[in-house]
Each structure stands twice: as structure tokens, then as C-alpha cells.
Image: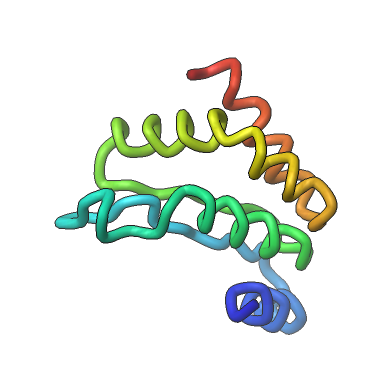
Length: 101
């Protein structure tokens, strides 16, 4: 809810494109210390419905992004759950990742 409110607020008064960055796994972190893939998927989907112009998923290493993508693709149940939450652009991105992983 907080991310969605913040994104909506910035989008309402900035006249430039608004991009939101989510760290999938940052420097010095482990998979045990970062948000689970399900949470990142949920927040990204909810933020997307605010009308922002894009989302950037960041990680310290490309391998971490690939692992995040694999986890998102594998979690079909979560993608199905998020279909009625808005943010269809993000769900389409997750679906396109199936071709990559």
C-alpha cells in the first residue's frame, strides 16, 4: 500500500516520466535477507496500476536477475492471483520472461 501511495503521489505532480526501481538483490544481501519474489511481484503489480511510466528491477549481478525471473515464471499461481489486481503491463512482462528462462 505504501509503495502504491508514494508512486501515485509522485506521478500526480511530476511532469517527467516516473520510473520505479526495485532491488531484487542488492550488494551484500543474500536470498534470505531480501523480499521474496512473491512480494516483489505483488508490489510491482500494484505500483504499475498507478500509471507510472516504468519499473526497473535491479540486482548486483545478472545471475540474481535471472534467478528472480525464473522464480517469477515458476510461480504461475501468484501470477494468476495478481490478474485482477491491475498492473497488467507487469504481468505481461512476467509472462514474456517464460521465453527467456
